[in-house]
Structures are given as structure tokens and as C-alpha cells.
Length: 423
Image (cartoon, rainbow, N blue to C red):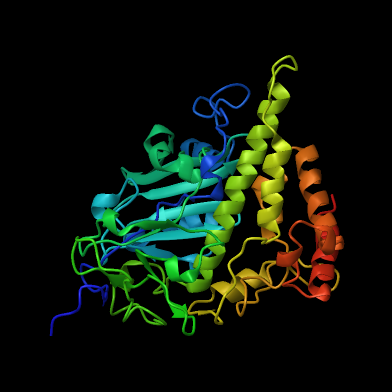
């Protein structure tokens, strides 16, 4: 039986594909450039101070060793070093990133993330690492085995084509995309693509991803392929890729640390990468503004950047979930246990997963290194604006969005914001 042209098939063998380079397309595609190559930042020329640069020094001096294990090499050791949970694994089969020749539906790229690190792995390839620096923002590295030892390289030009563009808010940043592809994994550009963040409807997410989990009657674009590279008739119907809890019929899961590409991990990832992009932009704007002579006009407006960050951290533009969502791995339970917890045992990591991602209108990313690295004036401004919005939501320009939360939830978020951000 011939499949209608506008229907999709599950990605078996040489499935279809779309998406991700670990980088994010933020709403700020039209944001003014911030010249991070000039003083005082000097992004490309500066010597990073990161978890990876410190590890590299210790490895080269013989103070430390990383253990290689199995086909994944140093992957598990690096995840442990960077406090990145294996349960955060997400799989994409889009031919993107510097390792695109290796990526295909039966050999997908795995992405992992923690609060302060991102790790990419393709079977048969190298490790891709992204970690924060207090001044430089997000810094990029690769790691590969050389003569039986891990070799780490700081990457700038090689990564910036994807990771420093209008899609990453014109700073070295993160991006997630959803795209249709042909059976070889090449994007079908004529079919269109979607930038993905927490404001995106699920119906437009995860083209080119494997997705494990349940989500009711809500559709998405994961776990499927187009029949060929021709522009498909619209709408494209995902007939077999929804509510998939076992990916083993779609890809060779034995190549990876876990058999999952957890839907909850995907939701959290897409929130977090945008938060990190905004934090970097606030940091750059503040540094450039402080360095610029007072005689020069129009210094970067760090407060405008900070207001955009506040909006994101309060989930103002989050797209509501239409149906409850449940993952297949231990990601949600492990994530929720991480805390920190307030004196009443509450945490900003508590999930809702029925109508939205999290229970409270305040992002856990205020605990991450990039937020803590913000200049004190900028960090206190962001926290103050968040507190004001939660205290008097009726007076906020975002009153409609904040009204989705109960008074008790807003009050709890406000209390945690005050208690958990004390010096």
C-alpha cells in the first residue's frame, strides 16, 4: 500500500530528521549586536576559566586521570566530572553540528545537560562540550582520545557558524530547532523549520528528535520521517511517532548510555538554553556599558536585556501544555531531588507537567553559574523585578500570564526567591 504523500512514517533505519545543534533560537533574533570581541570581553582571544580548562590543566600535569569505558570512551567520566545526569539524554538524528557525516537515524547524536554544562556525543565521533565562564559566557570545547589519552581543544571559529548568529541572539549561545528531513537525515529546507523554546507549541517541536514519553492527544513532530526530499503537502501528519515509550524499534539504542530521549528532559532543556542565552547577553551588555567612556552615546542598555531575562525566568511566554506529559526515564525524579530546598521543603524544580512544565512561576536557573556570575547590580535588579512582579501581579504588564498561577503558588515562589538567593 502506498503511503499518502502528506503522511509520515516512523524513523526506522534511515529515518528522517531535523534539528539540533546545541544552540538556541531566541526571540531576540533582531536584538542589537553586542561586540563581544572588543574590550573588555575579547571573546576569541581571552583565556577561559572554566571547569574544562581546569580539568585540562590537571590532566596535562598528571594530577588527574579520566577513565575510558566501552564504546562511549570518556563520555561517562566527563558527565560525572561536569555533574551532568545520564538521565538527561536526548537523541537527535539531524545531520547538524561538526559531526554531521556520522549522524543518522541509526546513529543519532546524544545530548546531555546539567545546570552548568552541555555535552554532545555521536557514536564513533568526539565529545562536544559547552561550559560557562564568568566573563565570557558559554565556552566551547571538543574532546577526543589521542594515544590513549583525552585531548581537549578550545573551539571558537569552528563552532561559531552555528553558535553565534541571529538564532542565538547574536552572542555565542545555544539553539534548538525543529525541522523536516528526508530519509538520509538531510533537512528538507523547503518544508520549513521552527525555532524551539518554551514558548513553542508542542505541535511544532521535535522534528528530527527521538522523543520517548506520553503526551495525550497533543501531537508533535518527533519520531518520524518524510518519504523523500520533496516539499511535503501540508499539514504533515505524524501517524506513528506519538506517545512512543520504547525507541528500540526506531533506532539502535544500544549505542547510547540509556534507551531514552525523555520528553521531560526535552522540555526542561528548551527552557534552560534560552535562560542561559539571556544571562550571557545581560552580562555582555553590562560589561560593555561599564567599559564604554561616558562621552560616547548609546551605551548598551543592560537593563533592557535584564527585563527580557526577567520575563523568561517568570515563564511569562511559556506555551501551556494541553495534555499531561510523562517521560520514560528517571530524569524528572532525579531533577526534582536536586534542590536546593527552602525551610518548608519546597524547590523551584518541582514539576507540574499537566498544564505547564513547573509548579512555580520562578525558574530554577537562578541557581546556575551563569546567573551567579552576573554583575551584582544586574543580578539584584533581576531579582528585584521578579519579586515586584510576584508581589503585585495585578500591576504587572504580565498580569494575564501570572494569573495562571494561584495566589499560593505565587506566594511560595516569592518566598523561595527571597530565601534561596540569600548570600
